[in-house]
Image (cartoon, rainbow, N blue to C red; front, top):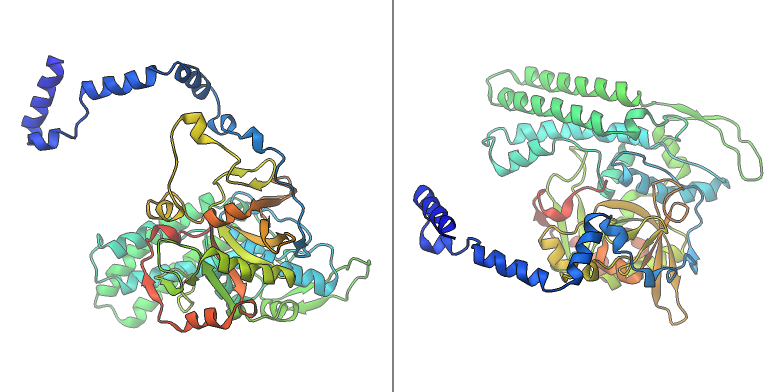
Length: 464
């Protein structure tokens, strides 16, 4: 103990710590008391042996909850086929396209159909590169350690996104079937390609800042930026293939009838097969850390320079659920995003607050509210899926919801996840619903001046 006291004295001399500051340091007496508290309970030794040699998640499985949540639903959107995003962060693209796929399957009586995710991913990455360079130009007068500039260079490009990036992408570039631009090794495993794109864009970002502040002729500045984009285009084509400007499509319906082949541009394909106005969809969020019934906008959260920032209406869960039920009853899937890793039983395909009991295993309480989890960065949206089903009880209430995932048919319940109504309340963050299912009073919120939020707000990471 004398040596410890001497160590604290020396520490104070070298660092200039005063007595008040040293009060926050752990003393050996504090540590001894904590150790004694642990060792007073004999069961702790057995738990230590179990936890140190086993998977905590497996030890925390709540066996009393097994089999209590089935996969039966009173109402489900008619959709066929499960997609697989593989090792990529393109869930937002899969989710957006999977909400539209049932429309095509119904219209053309198809047993199977899939849009090309790689096609829209290509243009997403190219547009994000252009947006990064434009923001670098706009912020060139700010120092490199400015928070906005620092954020920009930390996040030059990524494969994640959300509904607004999906909608703007489709409006500009249309859609193609997967046969017109299939997946590649790099689209299924995006990590290395993304790493190299970030490296190149950071280098280009520094150069474009210097060029912007130079006395170089404007025409030469534009030429320099276009050369940077040409390099990005080359990297994308080599990784993903070159996107088609036109293609031929032919299909076989569920009765075996084969259509005549027809040539489309991507825009023509979207207009003929889907033809809906994506601006008629409204993004809702449940974020109790911010005021409800307000319109919010996230700075720079888009993929097109001329596109729309991520904009949403913040509402209580019960209101959002009422709109969602109407959409499912009308056989229309929705873009849904959540904190999927929380209480996920991936083997049985359930999202239930009672799947795992970490409190009893570890002997500690986890008592944060949804608001507190958001404010402390403990929880936020991590994954997008299509909301396709709801179970409505005799009294009109709901007890569970059905999600179509994009992790392949071998994951979950044949590619689907069943979530309880209580899990929806705690871990759902975003839901996109057509405005025809939304009441007029709520739609009036869209007329408000949006409250602008910074891109580094912890709630607004793109879905992966």
